[in-house]
Amino acid sequence: MASEQELEAALAALAAQLEQAKQETDPERRQRLLDALAPRLLPDPIGMRRNDLLGKIAEKLDRLVTLEIATVVGRPVPNEHGDGYRPPIEADADAMLTRIDLVQGDVTTVIPAEFLADNRKELRDFHAEREQRGHAIIQHNLDALARLLELGRSGTPGSAPAGGGGEPQ
Image 1 (cartoon, rainbow, N blue to C red):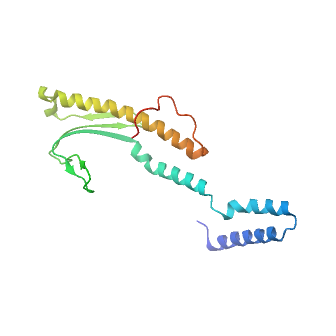
Image 2 (cartoon, one colour):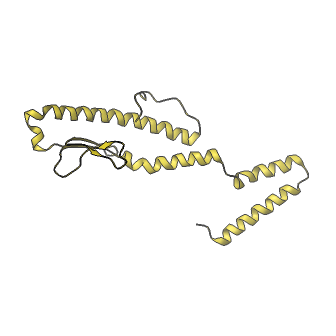
Image 3 (tube, rainbow, N blue to C red):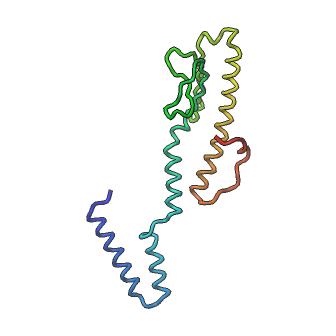
């Protein structure tokens, strides 16, 4: 972090350069001096938006590291906004849980013994289908993230990567 003295010295230097540009009689040289000062004095809205986008992507990266897929048997609970539901996540809820670590490539699935009974085969199959869908979602989201990062770096979107189709998440 800059000290107050450093900021004052930088501001004084910019003020002196601006004054020099204002006193320049050659219009072309004056414009070159002003153009050189502009990025240091004026905000760059496009660059700021790009940096904001990259910052938001970086903040969300921790959420991209692990995908959790839960198959829960129980009554849905209204969410805190009252506009939808969330799964019941009580200690006594019957649930199968799969965690996929995208960095390490580890896949962990927890299946309680009661889900191994023959009458729960459909739930196991349903959970396995959700795991497969999870892999497709991961691929789609990684493709989208790559396009966002490219846009954030260059300011212009490139061609979509192969296999980047599918529904947005």
